[in-house]
Image (cartoon, rainbow, N blue to C red):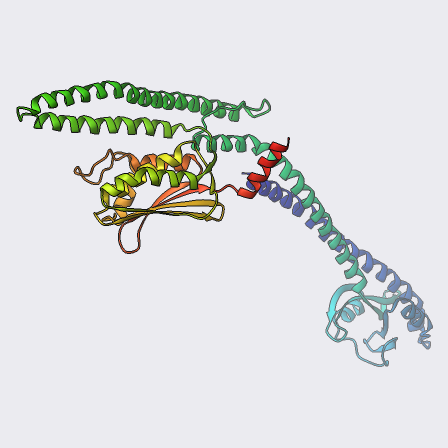
Length: 467
C-alpha cells in the first residue's frame, strides 16, 4: 500500500511536470530561434541598405563592411546581382550562380527568406537570412547571411537540462515527502496487520487504537478487537472445559477401576472374571485417554519457555524407560555430546516429549530391536531424534500421525494423542517436530528446539552472582 501510494504521487507529479515543462521547453526553443533570426534579419537589412546604392548605380562593391561583419560575427555574407550571380562573398570567390538556391530565388522576387538547416559539409546547423536589395520598386540583387546556430542550440539544450534538473529535484522532494505521507497514511493498516499476525500466532490480546486513525480504520479495528475477544473467550472456555473435564473424570475412573479389580479378584476364584478383566482394560484405556486430554489442554496453553538442559533430561528419561525396554527385549541407547545442552523450552515439555516418543518407539519395536535417542547441537537450535526399528510409516501416514486421535488402526494401542502433544509442546517452545524414515528401516522422529548459547548464559549467571 505504501509503495502504491508513493507511485501514485510520483505518477501525478510526472504528469504535472510534463504538462508544464514540455510547453515551456518548446516555447523557449522557439523564442530563442525567433530572436536569433530577428537579430540576423536586422543585420542583413542594414548591410543590404549599405549595398543598395552600389548595385543601383553600378559602382564597384566595397567588401570592407561585409568583411568586418563576418569577422565580428563569424557569418558568411553573400551579395548577388539581380540574376543571382555573386558579386561579394566573404567565404568564396565571386561570380558564382546562387539563383538555384530557394532562399536566393525568393529574395530576388522581393521577399525575405529565413530558416535553419543542417549543413552536411560543416556538420552543424546553419541559420540563413536572405533579403532583397531593392530601390524604387526594382530588385537589384539580394544579400544572404549564414550563421552557425550551435550557440542557440546549446542555450536550448542547457535550458532543457535545467528543466530536467528541476524535475529531478521536484521528483526527489515528492518522493521523500510522499514516502512520509504514505507511511503516515498506512500506519493504521500496518498496526492492523500486526494485530492480525498476533491473532494468527495465538495472541488474542487487543491493543488500543491510535486516536488519530481514520474512522474506517477505527471501525475495522473495533470489529477485529471484538472478534479477537470472542475467540479468546471461546478458546479459554474450551481449554478450561477440556482441562476440568479431564481432571474430574480421573477420580471416578480410578474408583471404577478399583471396584472392577476387586470384583475380578472375587470372581477369579470361580473362573468367571474374563469379562471383568476386559472391562478393566477398557477402563485403563479410558484413563489414559483422559490423562492425554489433560496434557493436550495444557499443551494448548503453555507457560513461557525457560532455559533447559536437554542433555540432563534426556539422560534421566533414558534411565526411567530402561526397565520397560529391558522387559520388551529392546536396546535403548542415548547418543549425546559432552557438557550441558541448553535450549529454550516450556517447563516440563522435554520430559513429556521424550516420554511420548519413547512410549511409541518401544511399542512398535520388535524383540531384539533397538531404539536410539540422539542429541545434537545444531546452528541456532538443538536437535533431538528418536529412531526405532519398527515397521515405519508411509508418507500419507506420516502426515496423519500428527493428527489428534489417529491410531493407525483400531488394534494399535494408545489414544492417538502422543505425537500431537509432542508437536504442540515443541511448537510452544519455539521449535518443531517432523517424521522421517530411518535408514535401514523404521521411523525417525526429529524434534528441534531453540538453542541457547552456553557461554553467553554462563557469563550472565556469573555476572548475576557477582552482583
